[in-house]
View (cartoon, rainbow, N blue to C red):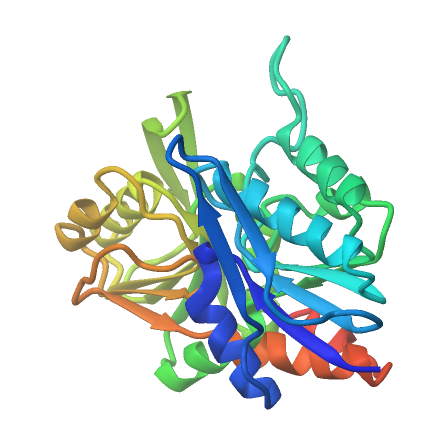
Length: 309
């Protein structure tokens, strides 16, 4: 039984590092693009009887998701033994429920399509909503960037550390960090009038004179993050750093971050950066995913990567 690691175009660089950490080269994929924009990926080496890992984050555009589906179908039709979709960033995860009438549940639809394409397992990181795991009828390995972030926070060696959640939805995640680090907890409560636009925000908890670390699963337009940072500094915080797993960073995100009171934003490479910034530092998840792939093949426990405590 062999292992082959392939990648879609959206995550090719990360996949190369994952494959290298695993001890092999990335499998060859060729994508034929027609003049009208239609594309056809093909696996350029045999996968018959192999365990195939296909790495592709599914951030917009939707072609990234569809390219992953085509690669899965190609592996299935080429007689792969098992097909594992490695999706560092699972797109459409914010559509995990009907929050108003007549809307789709995009996360469930994405899961249905992946199952229909033929995956045997999915490996992902920091889902926007944990319940998305239940949308799949195959095993889900849900990894947490906390295994990387906690080491970084420990390195600050601050005696006045406070963990903050940027909104109510992130309270559980922040509380887990707070317990693990045995430090204080603060909560930023925001009220939105519409998506990506904050009407008002307040802080619950003592942050005066503290080194505050904001924890979140993603940073999109950076509106919430930078508003929280500015508010925390206004409340007397000594410094504000943020750890966000997925660097979506769309629209005015880079400008907001550069002009904010954030000391530093630490993200992972689940989504490739489109710009650079002196305030943004990227840490790789390649070794983490490689280790989980290795343990999966050897049928060893990977539960240590599921929890932050």
